Length: 114
Image (cartoon, rainbow, N blue to C red; front, side, top):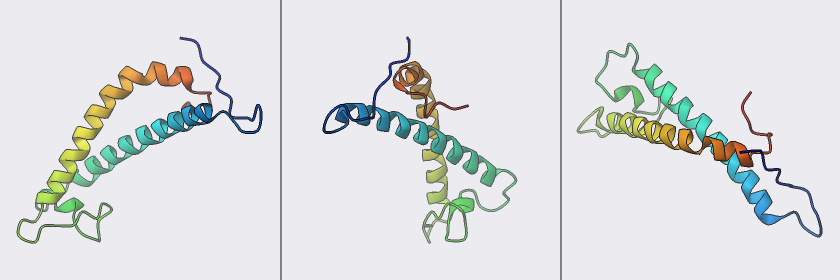
């Protein structure tokens, strides 16, 4: 596919609303991709070498994650959080691989990595 240029500038009284929406959506997809990858890296880094109860590395106000712990089951909500981030990252990776060519086609170049 070749790149499709979508204008954000005004051709009349207002910029084209679906052009702006397309450009905003593509930018949001790139931001989501970066955020999901960063979250997965942070979860992995927090777990690396952690010697406490599994999941507690994500729980409490003194962590970078702030997961509210279950007082009766320390670590459970943290484990649930790490699992959810892992599933999200796995599914996102599949989506991103399948959709990246289409995303690049409608990306005006402002949000392309590199």
